[in-house]
Amino acid sequence: MTAAAGGGRYGEAAFRSEQAGEGRRIDVGALAYDDITMARLRALGAGPGWRCLDVGAGTGTIARRLLDEAGVESVLAVDRDVRFLAERPGLDVLEADITADITTADITTADLTAAGSAAPDVVPGRFRLVHARFVLMHLPEHERLITTLAELVAPGGVLVLGDAVDLTSDRTPDTPYTTVMRAMWQGLRATIGTDVSWVPSYPQLLRGAGLGSVAAEIHVPPLLAGSPVSRFWADTWKRSRAAMLATGLVDDAAVDAAIRYLASEECAALSAGMLTAWGWKAEDGSSS
Image (cartoon, rainbow, N blue to C red; front, side, top):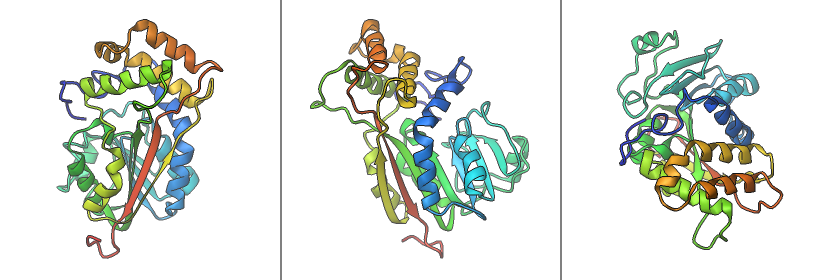
């Protein structure tokens, strides 16, 4: 991932893979969202014969479920740091920065061999499914990246994008949760460039990339004491605490109060939603 305006990068300035427990944090987030993602991918037809590309694959939960539950032919899991990914039959792993390496120019067999993979070439138009979740929100040049990903979709295939939607606003009641969530979004934007304000534009951006039959949906998991999404946000706040404190919007006491609030029966708030949008490439490969 590329540098933010403030000079930071996801995985370096915040959410470092080598930090103890980071893989567990990602997996807890997966518990909150994977069922919804898989239901959508299967509804779109993901199944036998499909070659899939999972961008920003994290710990590989979606890649493995595509193989085990949907029965797809193969998945290439790509991430800038692949320490949480393991190859297995049907699943190949490639360490790459999508802002620099996955382009409409080739990622060739040589690149994959250097990454320790015997997977076929990654070339434009190869994949029936290209999926990226909680990735683009951390990156600049959104339109260029979406166009690049669309060009990797095979004729008749689908690009599926998922990212967070902030549901706090100036009309949302002030609670320990909303106070800290606002500080988190502002702090991450200043530190690593995270920007979810443009995520509702996904459908139009997919159309702009030449895809058709575009649609989108939003899922908001309930914030219940001890639920995966509540645990995910609590852990995320702990790991982004420095960025939040730097905004001046919260102090340590406010962050600690919000973590206690999430774990209590007093919590009454909306989690950030996950917007999933998709668009299809025409069977002849032309723009729709």
